Image (cartoon, rainbow, N blue to C red; front, side, top):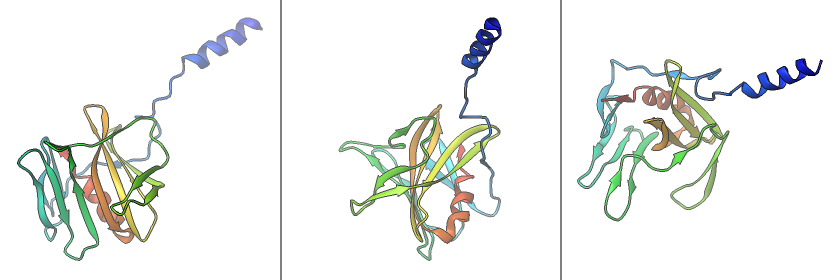
Length: 175
């Protein structure tokens, strides 16, 4: 009986939870043939609807990114800059991923982003998008860049446009 108990304990201790691949509900990465492809980061592209405006990726001393819908319902941007240089990515997030994150908006108010969606390529999690359930929502995308999840995009959008945001994120692709 003691041996059986010890065997059970050893088997239980040997089990390892893998939050990156098991039982994850994810949106699969997919191109959209009806949209345009633009540079997103040094090593990545993204697709957006043809009617989106803004410079996309730009920069002289590092990259920034801005694009938005003509009706103002979707705004996508990043700018992770120090006084000397702008980087493709911002802060990192650890796995297992938190259920929610708190951010400061442009007015300095704290917002809780209590909803999230994951994006996968096969069984690998490529990104996690946190957003609020407010009518005018803010969101943050963390992207898997060389096995480190880094802040890669800030999104401000009308919540009714969530499907469009998900469709855009699904198109991110390494060059």
